[in-house]
Figure 1 (cartoon, rainbow, N blue to C red):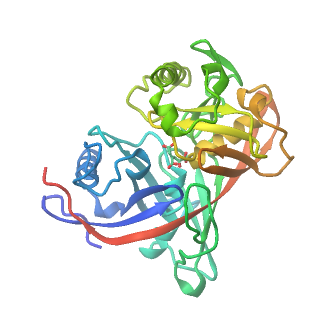
Figure 2 (cartoon, rainbow, N blue to C red):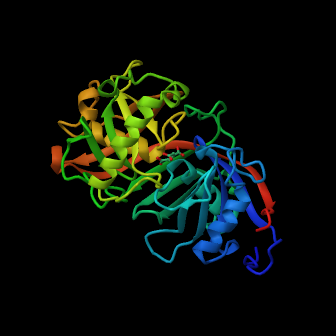
Length: 364
Ligand code: NQM
């Protein structure tokens, strides 16, 4: 594909729309977008249809989980095959944020990279090493490429997606402290923040873990019920703003991190139950690295998550129950308590190509 013509305001842009895990996003080659971040973000707002709660004039879906962008390029680093920059295109505001990554959209990066010829399909399963530019971690994705091309059809179900598809296995390394610089960004396993006990953790996603009961919730509410509770959402935001500063993230009023996870005891045989504010809507399931971070918090002795969790099978997957099912995360660690170190984490997702074509932006 030719490099994006920055001077042609009516030019269409090559784009692949994909469902990645439980999110939906637009995937672009970096060379098809303006190199200047301000021009790129302005273009993305017009392509996605923001600012508008319905994103009617663009290809966004009117919700943070369907207003996401992946920018992919060949990696200059020997430890990776491709670079992945995640951009959250805000729905109702003219704002594009690179302040977090997205593990769900990540699930589509390897299929996209193979389809666009950045990585050759090799054998029945192709390994693609992806450097996450929003932090410093590397994810290794394993994609079904039987017959020499990406296979999207398959029999794997993930909670929150009604139909089965081919599995995309993701292994993470170096995600510990990816955004905040350390696994425990406040330096403690447990803090008191705005009057409640909280565990602040970053294993790929900065998350503030709070017991749902401490905020008068059960932790089993639906996203709609939680979003309708104005007193609760105000309290969650108060905790988030204070936690953001304590986690070294500064003033987080307009940023999408940290997330806040309200946790409770599991109800369906899992490890823990979670409802995640991402941060102003409630996730209909749970983010990938959000889940990895909550699961890691479970392994921290004395944390709010460990207190809420049921018994965990040593070495087995940690199952996080969420509004539409469950999410299994494998976390390999060494050490305990504040000395806990993460070796790697693994999850299974699915992804599907929805369309591949050219999208035309609204004129500036
Ligand atoms: O935590 C939502 C999602 C995400 C992010 C969000 C994600 C992750 O489910 O890795 O996947 O927390 O904004 O798409």
